[in-house]
Length: 245
Length: 245
DNA sequence: TATGGTTGTCTATATCAATAGACATATTGA
DNA sequence: TCAATATGTCTATTGATATAGACAACCATA
Image (cartoon, rainbow over all chains, first blue to last red; front, top):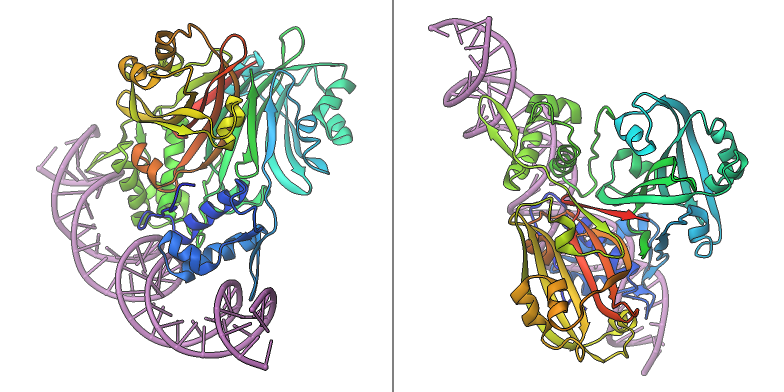
């Protein structure tokens, strides 16, 4: 282990939040798997070099997130620790990718709209700026816990009706199939990270300061013609990506 | 544009820091490319729904990072906006990957040590736990700006002397070549994101609350035998990863 | 040179964050 | 049942954060 996990003062991020972030990450890394409990508040206070009350604020925030549960007299129990793995390969599909890691997968269609492609979307789909594209906003859940929010664009002509098909099957793969596209492949994925904005916080049930992994992906049909461009925003503490070359 | 970029109160993250994060990101996305300047403090205060003094705190933090420079009477100029792209492919190499995006690449060897492999390292390098491995700590810079900090492990027997070779060539590829490994490939990359810890903040010249993109990578020789396992921590606001399938 | 727009500085006040100490309450195990 | 170890609650104090208003200093330009 890395010894003391230090925190910094007067940086615009409250100590209790820095500590909450570190404990959440430690739980995710399996640091306390032996006991299934977080160390006592007094011990954490000593480790982080802060007052016990500050640690309590951090644990209260984690309890609010449903990650730990404090029991008077016993200690603070770890309720949930999960980090789903998303393989990013030529055959990347959301549902199939984590189907064996969660009991229940769900995909919600939040919004559907036909719009004109902006420069970025047009470039990825190899259309002209202003060309008609169908935009889908989707929220994906694993075991009733939101995992990612995605915006996808499809060429409107070729994939008219993909919104309905998606709503019916709750799967891009099956929606494509219904529209006559039997197979497709992942061409490119760009990965960045950023702080969650207000909308993300609400949809993904996160707390301010939370981190997102952002994947911009382009899928093509087997002839290499772009069929989908998407920007997915994942709660970083719940997922990891794996790239197999 | 997304209209108002809201910020939240009483969340453990100071408003000025939330605003600084949003402005930094907006600059990175080219939002203010037209003028090369950030909007006036009064406008930003109105946009974010806060007092002008709060905006000033945010801009002061960005000025401290060298991202903007305030000029009395004129406005706040954007000094730097960069996001290096790292392709992750079977032939991923750090230096070659961004050689054309920055004028000056540098790689510093911070530490070299022969240690016993822990369970994680042993698993990736397909050794027994406790086997001797050489651990290198490296800091990589582009145009004198720190980009990533990496810890790499190599089988000690096969790559004795890799520390010296790396120090000489400032390149893993060339160090491998000197030790008789002419070519190698990237087998697996795992990508996650996390908040920077104190050590990262110092080495990568970041401010608390900053985000890291973390890549755990395994390279093999052409026979598929693992030759390197590394954990690289990138400043998320300075890089993006690209996966071409 | 006068004006409007911008950043810089100062004072004052209210709220949040963090520390400190004391004690209550619940659980476990000797 | 008792002691040790936890979390829960309360009061008090200090420093950081945020708001509010006023005015100075500087820049571009009409």
